[in-house]
Image (cartoon, rainbow over all chains, first blue to last red; front, top):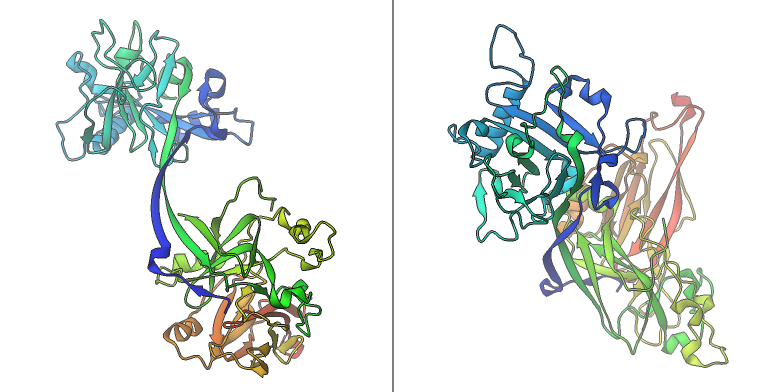
Length: 327
Length: 222
């Protein structure tokens, strides 16, 4: 027999959390030199709504979008109106509604509460991390942003908060000053917190008034007066992705009397006759396991694993190999 | 392709093309129920029973050899299965299909009844569990099925169809029926013969044979 049936206890399903730098090429952080915009995107139709930030310049074919920045405003300011005769309707208003829907769902009266003046709550800057960068979720505590207009570093409060707040968009952490997860309310701040981190949807909301220094930092689109941009003030951006990899572990047991002969053509003197290569192998055959195949009932090869070096097998040895199959 | 790092023992498995196909089919056919071991890449002629350092060194040329990464092509992986035979076996089972090569014209049919030589003391026998036959490119055949093994799994396997790309198809039976396709579209301009391979494995013995399959264009059909 060459195929051995697996028992139910030979299977184990395990889920492991894997964290890694979010940015391309596993860079731990992006710097002002590796956060660039592409004129073809900012000047195109999508530039009305968001600005993509890439790791490399436009002429480099290896450039990959890392994240996007969008500006939302309840009153539609910061963008040219769709129609000059209809006030308040502009791309920034569309972005505002989009994020309200995403983050607050059916609660029409909900909104951000930065803890400062109420009017501050009607506007935000959103950093939307590319899905391929954050994989399943942003790792809380890994977010740290340095702006040229702000002395403190911006980070979330995941390391120090005793409870996790759950919203329509999953977990939410408050952004404050500090480093890597110990963000606290900035001392003397009259504009409230720096924003919020929504790790499960890969979104970071920033309070333009709190991070702007002397004046609110507002993102104007390509149709507006592009005076001050968020990406232009970013000097260092740390972020890690986190994903849960579900693995099947399959324990393959080869008993001492099993798998000691091979149909490998070099195991016999001649492939057409089948006589075993060495007389010693007749009573004491030795084989080397290099591959393990996983089959269904129909003997279809579904998955294959290779050992990193040959595993010797004979009548005096038993082998237990754990095969890991990731999904 | 690359060499695996052999400083640590790793056994991460990858899905084969067939595995991906069955996973996408989502009909329960992707269900691992059994395993097999193989010794692809091993050349047993490097076993040195005359090594002056003794038996611990007979396999020195094999023990630490680096191995290639796994191939996702299910027809290229698990070529040489390790098999369980009674101790003292002096001859290994061998498959005989009765053909060295299968050459079919469009629309022609053939039935193959594999036999196993040197198995369980018999010089020539049919394996009770039947044979697994895999055609490398199923597009070349309009019919490819196995008969003689009447389990539910074998019946389901023989009736499944995958359309489109050059994927393999596996059937189970004691007799394998093949009918060449009549489709001319597979033949590029100026090409009159297409080739693939037929892999047959004894389900009991693990013996394996690969023979080429040639599909010849009926030029009078053009």
